Length: 346
Figure 1 (cartoon, rainbow, N blue to C red):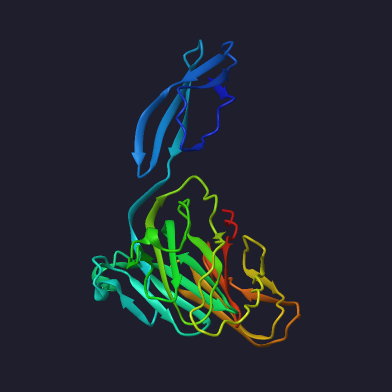
Figure 2 (spheres, helix red, strand yellow; figure 1 turned 30 degrees about the vertical axis):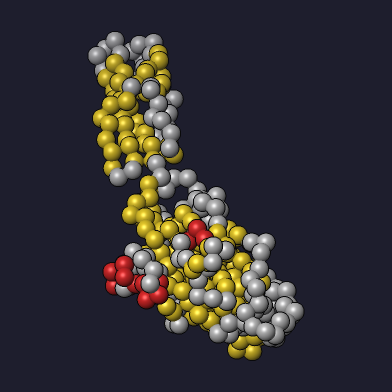
């Protein structure tokens, strides 16, 4: 007794924000009958989180009464972001909006001099109390050589849909001569973002002691099938900040920072290459996407113009996304990498 054989079966696919097929087709063949075409319609619909599944069951029966069944499962995944909320960065020298008589929470941060500052980003911290919210990421403020750059880095599982940045000589922006903390009135605002986990605003020309307010709307990423089109993007405003001191110095154009990281994805060892036009103490930090420091490597004698290559053993790191942070005297730059080792054959 020989069962029929179903051939030309369609592949099981995961669609992205599409529509499950109304039907699928295949063919069958057999030594007891001529065979022919088969059609299967969706059945057994079910949903798990943001994925819809359906089964397509093909059955072929020959003239001898032998039968065979094959099932193809198709799925359709959609983007889903939940629990969106207001987020603000808080530095070491800050003032809560509520303390100055405003009716909404948030912080304005004071920076007396240039430097590199890493601020926690809190979402939903009502009454300016971080314990009432969640730390959803970090904001790195690089204030060097007369320019300010504000970089948002969200922890794994969180994304952002908008960023508003205020940089100025006074604590708050003004509208019609009156101070305001409405994010839409900040002087450097992005358009709507595609739920990104990393975004940079700047560089923006500034001088003297400044105040910075870094606002975002963050969400929990439940499911994503579309790739973010501007993840890791940059918004470079055309404006500048009025000098915040009497002595105005001609700013030096900030040299863009970068480094190479390869291979991506890597299996056990990551190679970094860099070449900067200034002497600097340098540190390389590797973080998990939820902000845990995994490894730190220092170079306290880097000489400008030197092309350097460093290999970092990460064989003990599980498959995951990571952030490599390069810290120099002229600023900080981050890069996302992927650790991905091949599955062991059974």
